[in-house]
Image 1 (cartoon, rainbow, N blue to C red):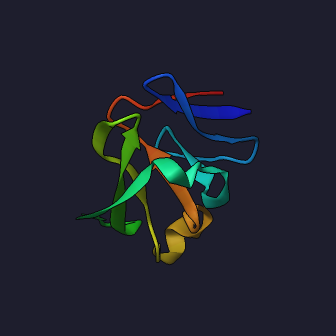
Image 2 (tube, rainbow, N blue to C red):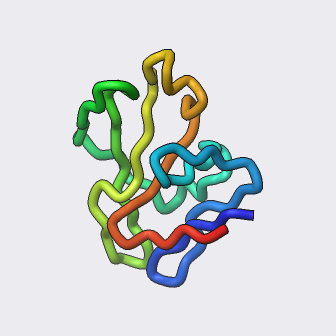
Image 3 (cartoon, rainbow, N blue to C red):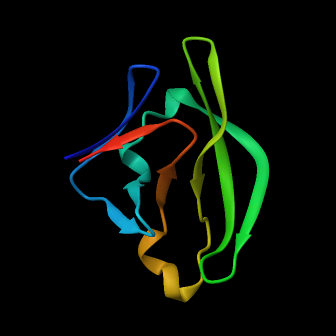
Length: 94
């Protein structure tokens, strides 16, 4: 069971993650949405496509753009559709 935590709070938990480039991609429905805040940030990966971001808001502390996802990944990355990954201090353990 993989778990993502930040500031001591469980953000996501699943036994169905997909690992791509050493990142666990959690099913979107495994994430505690009450901690997510939409972000206007996007980045581009040549083989996955355009990434969108969420910031985390946990007990008044913000972690800007700490969650990313590919709403419409390229065919080569279809396995990460409807999944999110974490960085910027979010601890992921399995």
